[in-house]
Length: 93
Image (cartoon, rainbow, N blue to C red; front, side):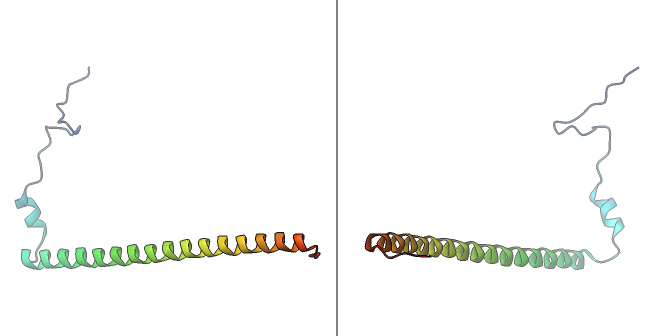
Protein backbone atom coordinates (compact mmCIF):
# COMPACT_ATOMS: atom_id res chain seq x y z
CA UNK A 1 0.00 0.00 0.00
CA UNK A 2 1.31 3.47 -0.86
CA UNK A 3 1.75 6.01 1.89
CA UNK A 4 1.59 9.78 1.53
CA UNK A 5 4.79 11.70 2.32
CA UNK A 6 4.24 15.44 2.84
CA UNK A 7 6.53 17.55 0.66
CA UNK A 8 7.27 21.25 0.68
CA UNK A 9 7.12 23.50 -2.41
CA UNK A 10 10.61 22.35 -3.51
CA UNK A 11 9.72 18.67 -3.24
CA UNK A 12 11.65 17.92 -0.05
CA UNK A 13 10.32 15.56 2.59
CA UNK A 14 8.84 17.58 5.45
CA UNK A 15 9.31 14.72 7.91
CA UNK A 16 13.10 15.04 7.75
CA UNK A 17 14.62 17.23 10.42
CA UNK A 18 16.81 20.10 9.25
CA UNK A 19 20.38 20.23 10.38
CA UNK A 20 20.62 22.96 13.00
CA UNK A 21 23.53 25.28 13.65
CA UNK A 22 24.36 23.39 16.84
CA UNK A 23 25.04 20.19 14.93
CA UNK A 24 27.11 22.08 12.37
CA UNK A 25 29.16 23.75 15.08
CA UNK A 26 29.90 20.39 16.67
CA UNK A 27 31.58 19.18 13.46
CA UNK A 28 34.33 21.83 13.61
CA UNK A 29 37.00 22.03 16.28
CA UNK A 30 38.46 25.36 15.08
CA UNK A 31 37.08 28.66 16.36
CA UNK A 32 34.32 30.15 14.23
CA UNK A 33 36.41 33.28 13.53
CA UNK A 34 39.14 31.15 11.94
CA UNK A 35 36.64 29.17 9.88
CA UNK A 36 35.02 32.39 8.66
CA UNK A 37 38.42 33.90 7.80
CA UNK A 38 39.33 30.77 5.84
CA UNK A 39 36.02 30.82 3.96
CA UNK A 40 36.37 34.55 3.21
CA UNK A 41 39.91 34.03 1.91
CA UNK A 42 38.72 31.17 -0.31
CA UNK A 43 35.86 33.28 -1.64
CA UNK A 44 38.17 36.23 -2.31
CA UNK A 45 40.65 33.99 -4.14
CA UNK A 46 37.85 32.52 -6.24
CA UNK A 47 36.51 35.97 -7.10
CA UNK A 48 39.97 37.26 -8.08
CA UNK A 49 40.56 34.20 -10.26
CA UNK A 50 37.15 34.63 -11.92
CA UNK A 51 37.76 38.32 -12.56
CA UNK A 52 41.14 37.55 -14.15
CA UNK A 53 39.57 34.90 -16.39
CA UNK A 54 36.83 37.35 -17.36
CA UNK A 55 39.43 40.02 -18.21
CA UNK A 56 41.47 37.54 -20.27
CA UNK A 57 38.35 36.41 -22.13
CA UNK A 58 37.43 39.99 -23.00
CA UNK A 59 40.97 40.66 -24.22
CA UNK A 60 40.90 37.59 -26.45
CA UNK A 61 37.46 38.52 -27.80
CA UNK A 62 38.67 42.05 -28.57
CA UNK A 63 41.78 40.70 -30.31
CA UNK A 64 39.60 38.31 -32.31
CA UNK A 65 37.35 41.17 -33.47
CA UNK A 66 40.41 43.21 -34.50
CA UNK A 67 41.87 40.29 -36.48
CA UNK A 68 38.56 39.64 -38.24
CA UNK A 69 38.19 43.32 -39.12
CA UNK A 70 41.76 43.44 -40.47
CA UNK A 71 41.19 40.25 -42.46
CA UNK A 72 38.05 41.71 -44.04
CA UNK A 73 39.92 44.91 -44.93
CA UNK A 74 42.77 42.98 -46.55
CA UNK A 75 40.28 40.78 -48.41
CA UNK A 76 38.53 43.88 -49.76
CA UNK A 77 41.88 45.35 -50.83
CA UNK A 78 42.84 42.13 -52.60
CA UNK A 79 39.51 41.93 -54.44
CA UNK A 80 39.73 45.56 -55.55
CA UNK A 81 43.34 45.04 -56.66
CA UNK A 82 42.31 42.00 -58.73
CA UNK A 83 39.49 44.01 -60.29
CA UNK A 84 41.96 46.81 -61.11
CA UNK A 85 44.34 44.31 -62.74
CA UNK A 86 41.52 42.85 -64.82
CA UNK A 87 40.61 46.35 -66.02
CA UNK A 88 44.17 47.03 -67.12
CA UNK A 89 44.47 43.62 -68.77
CA UNK A 90 47.44 42.39 -66.79
CA UNK A 91 47.36 38.65 -66.18
CA UNK A 92 47.76 37.22 -62.71
CA UNK A 93 48.93 33.70 -61.95
